[in-house]
Image 1: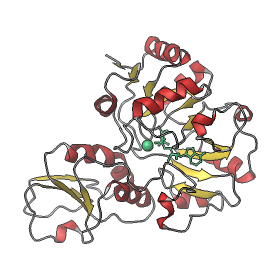
Image 2: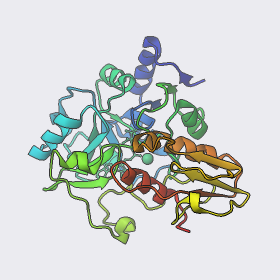
Image 3: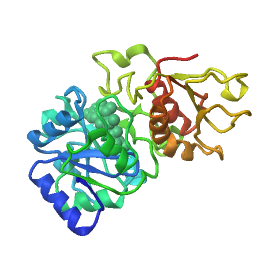
Amino acid sequence: MPLVAPTAPNLAAAAAALEKGLAVAVPTETVYGLAACGLRPEAAARIFEIKNRPTFDPLILHVPAGFDLGRIVRFLSPAAEKLMARFWPGPLTLVLPKTAIVPDLVTSGLDSVAVRCPAHPVMQELLRLVKFPLAAPSANRFGRISPTTAAAVQEELGEAPAFILDGGPCSLGIESSIVDCTVDPPVLLRPGAVTLEELQEIAPVKVPPKSAGRHDEAQKSPGQLLSHYAPRTPLYLSKRPLSLLEEFPDHTAFLFWKEVPTPLPKIFRVLTPSAQPREAAARLFQLMRELDASGAKKILADPIPPEGLGQAILDRLQRASSGEI
Ligand code: TXA
Ligand code: MG
């Protein structure tokens, strides 16, 4: 069985597997990742193969605290320095100009590389053991819901990784924010666990104008395809608060933000009974998985308050959805 506790011997075995070029599923504070050596194309190729991920979608390199970034990055802007000083280790990924040792497969041929220093102690320990950056996308099959527990990784990837290191449920539950620091001012490419407001306290991070351009060939973050994070059951975003609905059709599963109506529908989950966006983010992907497995024909999600972390939650639900009703 590849699912193991992160004991010292298991971490050593996982590090040895990574040194051999194999893939290992790892916990981070955001979501679980599928890791392999980020400096060897044949190791990174395993990730694309296991996830069934198109090679035009580049990977994030994960580094331990104190890593000599000069190995993989050509230049750090003052904004990048400030963002790193404030948010690393943590859920922030920076896109930076890459050095020649970063394989083209990892960056999909781009001249930049996405770098993140994760806070999860198990991942930090593993990164210190292997001594090379680990390329790691979320540990789901391409286009599917990101896993936030080791069990969800196993459900997604089965026996394909050499190990699945069980670091418990992810505390944040939503992916890192991605900021492009190859441009000045920096640009937010993916809303995530660090909110825009928090980023802007440190650097003048801009949001790109909203466009249908997510499907453009020239899109800046190639993985930001509109259709993503998708459950198998079609999911729709409700325009009106679900608590206002007068009836709840059978065969529909409901994802409530906070308020639940009476009488209750047959199948439902509540994102945050205490109306805390942080709690909602941490539960989002797991509850989507549960509703997806409920046997309902359709999932209907409450409107999400678009402030702070709500932005990232809304972004994931929009990408998971088949539209608004
Ligand atoms: O929280 C996270 O970031 C998780 C954990 C495992 O660290 N990882 C994650 O990786 O979400 P992934 O592969 O699912 O998403 C990475 C995103 C993709 O949308 C990809 O297109 C973008 O980062 N990306 C990677 N390299 C890039 C680059 N050089 N320029 C622009 N976008 C890049
Ligand atoms: Mg992903």
